[in-house]
Image (cartoon, rainbow, N blue to C red; front, side, top):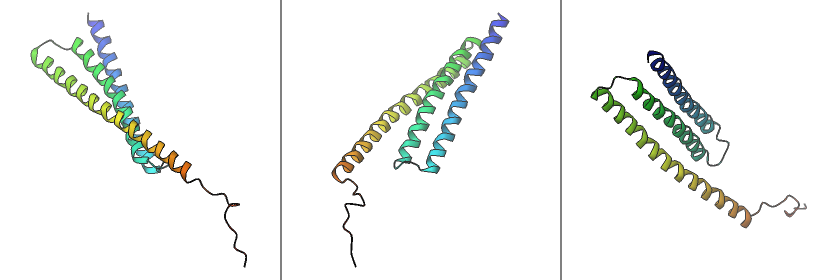
Length: 134
């Protein structure tokens, strides 16, 4: 039983570490996108990147908490603490997911409006512009 408990603790720690690493990578990538401003909608793109990483990282952290409930002592204060923590993380995941869907829809609307603008007002080639002869 002790060996199984130790294996679960190590596995839970690794899952939590991986979840935290995913969140850190998302923060770094989003900050880099925001600083470089490669796209016109850099703010939405960086928020989308961060939201996706937050969702995945939070899922791993919830899995870690569930594994922790298997290992920890089963007194009521520990269980209440874990239930509250998992509940908060699930709520946070829900709202981040909701915002992620809204961001994706807003990005699609922005891209489609840019395409329709380009269709209505195409760029003129240099050959099409009138030349001024002095």
